[in-house]
Amino acid sequence: MSGRAQLMWDEAVTGYNFGPGHPMDPVRLALTMRLVEAFELDRGPLEVVAAKPAGDSTLRLVHRQDYIEAVRRASADPAAADLSYGLGTADDPAFAGMHEVSALIAGQSVGAAEAVWRGDAAHAVNFAGGLHHGMPGGASGFCIYNDASLAIARLLELGAERIAYVDVDVHHGDGVQATFWDDPRVLTISLHEHPRTLFPQTGWPEETGGEGAAGSAVNVALPAGTGDEGWLRAFHAVVPELLGAFHPQVLVTQHGADTHFEDPLAHLAVSLDAQRAVAESCHSLAHEHADGRWVALGGGGYAVVDVVPRSWTHLTAIAAGRPIEPTTVVPESWRHEVFRRTRQLAPQRMTDGRTPQWRDFLDGGYDPADRLDQAVLATRRAVFPAHGLLP
Image (cartoon, rainbow, N blue to C red; front, side, top):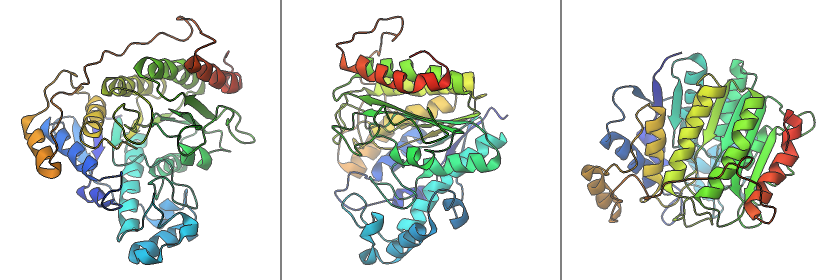
């Protein structure tokens, strides 16, 4: 396997634009790429690659043909968007070229999966991807085509027999879970804000997979207000043991930055430094359990200047083998670019000034009165026995 990493990037992905005022502002993608370039990560071991858009035969690995056709019609004439497919809604407004740019983003994730499986790269990143709410027959939650599901489906098509998907976006990875609900070859793990308080109101610990796939869906429903210690405690109490039992051949991860305490659409209180720590852990877990095969995707994240670019630049740097020290000063050229594009002041350093620490769930003791510990134990009880593990 190559020791190189690939960053999947085509400037045209910034055309994924639902319009003024929509939280999914494509400037977050452009600013991330400009920060990657400012740190010169696009040189050396990181190869920047633009994959071709996903064609209909690839999209059909996950999505129904009638839905693809509905997206294409809405793309050509946004006024004709069919609401029955989730198109033309407040969350997913139709826009000209929607099919083309959604297929382009999907193509980057599929290309990342192909590169990692074939050994062209050890790790591949598509921070424009991670659109995990897209359903086989409809749009949902700012997501048209589900590139994460398509990447996994392509890996299965290429011969992979065990794929683990770990989703740390603040929202439940419902579309990926739904796609592989009955498939024991795919282990989906989602850590997210509790469905009582956040869209899409799914991702309860009792959701554990369909018939013949018991334990293949794993959901950690975190209480609103969970911060660094609880988030990291939950991650390490669930993910490493399950990956160790499942023995994936590839690890696919989704790194939505909307767990951050500044994010305007959710209610967790996680820092950039904890997000970076989880990216480091995913990198290590890929090497420990999946022979280093790692596909890393973006996702949500609506603090588009202060959080998203730094979080995903850390992710890219880790995948490239050139991790950025958190106290590093943000390049002045990038701060000027931020002001030019947004008239906002950019952050000064690659850190929120936190040093994330957590107590191990088993060694650190279980508190039956703590809502975070209750959430972790509910998940372990629901799925660990199906993997031969003690809850």
